[in-house]
Image (cartoon, rainbow, N blue to C red; front, side, top):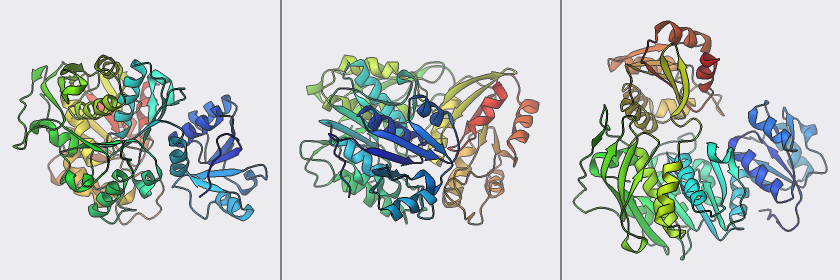
Length: 489
């Protein structure tokens, strides 16, 4: 594998530079004196921002974009060998790295690199830990899979010794990282276009845990089925966290409902083997479903403290526990942990308030897996509303087909479901599944479900049928957020 010499910057070309992670890595290299350029299939707000910062971006991927001045090319997992720029890089013999390999090499430059993994919650937990480090004036470098308003983007370049990044399991990419602290939030079936089954996914997370050095720490959700199998025999410290029994399933995969209306206090029963190293008690909710709780951890890190979140849903209390456990091991005091978690108001496309139209509220959320959908809709149930109308865009044919029943059950928590066409992303084979297939499953469960093949039809339906007090949630990992933007404009 090509090794970057960070003392001697070169010209790096990013194929797919408009992606949220690729753009962040491009900015980090540019800040270190590298000449950076790249390409993407279409222009976007991200590519325009890169251009404004002096990074040249080609719109359209063509062989002639790969010039002799390029010393290194970086690819995403979505770039295939038939891509013209990929072919040109190979023909010219230009060294190449994957996005994950580059991220791993960057981690080596920091004393305290942290990798946040899990099927769900990576962006939120990474952002929570980021806010904690900012509150502690730790001057971290951050690579987040979403836009964090407090840093004005998805990347922050600091001069401190900590580097926090998301670690995605797709194509085993997180196995190229070099973390000192690793977090595993949950392990579920996903990316079945790459992994054969859940056993293969668990094996990948086990390999991720084995990356951690003897002076590091693995922070793991003890609600994960047989979590001990993932953590056994590791040389590092193993730290567990979990929510109480009533809500622990939400962190691990089957969300339990928060109080549907107003504020309240959750019961706090734990399983018979007792609480984890980090746990929450005395959980309460405000009128918008924002949880607050007493944070418990090992005595050497201080007395229990009251944490108040400004994001809804009990699953976010679990994310906060994981972030707090990591912060403790980074030497952050509890006061900064409390301040940082209180400062976090969410990232773009994570239960993001968009605005109001004709008296109904529009929320946008990135949820594209049944567990994420369920957690989001249960969080929505704790918010003031007349009806919850979920406008869902399935993401990839393989995920829709393999998790069809789970999608139907999760979406049925909404009062009305509106389906858009499946967002194909990297896939070309429909596998014989469509949004109409999902519509039939939802209707079998007795829930009203409509399908429109065109965004314009969805907008017309919402304007004609939504009434004052309704909560409309656009949901999915594709471009479904455009519907809310269009309605508001």
